[in-house]
Length: 230
Ligand SMILES: [Zn+2]
Image 1 (cartoon, rainbow, N blue to C red):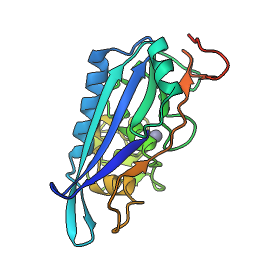
Image 2 (image 1 turned 90 degrees about the vertical axis):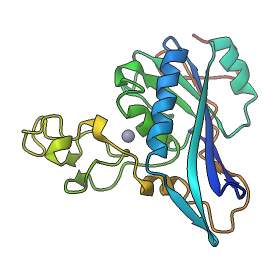
Image 3 (image 1 turned 135 degrees about the vertical axis):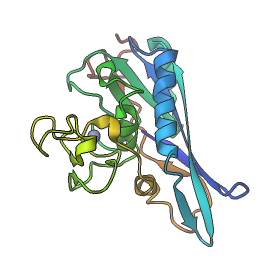
């Protein structure tokens, strides 16, 4: 995902803005609304603040969406230079067998699966974090520290209440993190803005523009050769 962070001195806010352009067989306004609601709610929940110079700024996420058909998305991607715009195809399967955001961190192009219960499972908010450049944490034992952070992957150790099965032994079947219990932590929000220094006065671009489209199965489409794709 790419995004733009804008420092607004009048309101003491840093606004992180992104537009998710959805396409593919399962891209609908209903689903897109659920996804964007989950991302905005989860990433705004910790009410993270960043000190710049002598002032404290509230960090506010404002993520929007639109759904386009294949010919519309093609026109848009070919001329896109806007760091706030991301292209995400939504299907029921792909060759990676999971929702993904390109092939590296911070790309503005993805292929997501409805089987990840987008908008009601924390997966969209987790992918959003990857897309803004956040990796999984190095250590994957979050026992005795409350709800696990949004960027932990499946298999992470957590307190019994946050396991698939609270009665399972830690690490055994059912004894790992149930994704629905992940929460964005303020530290994760600050990690997104780690390149914003105290002298920053203008917009900061987050992530990079790969402007890649994917076919139905998640294979990259070569945009300069063929102006139609399925
Ligand atoms: Zn992940």
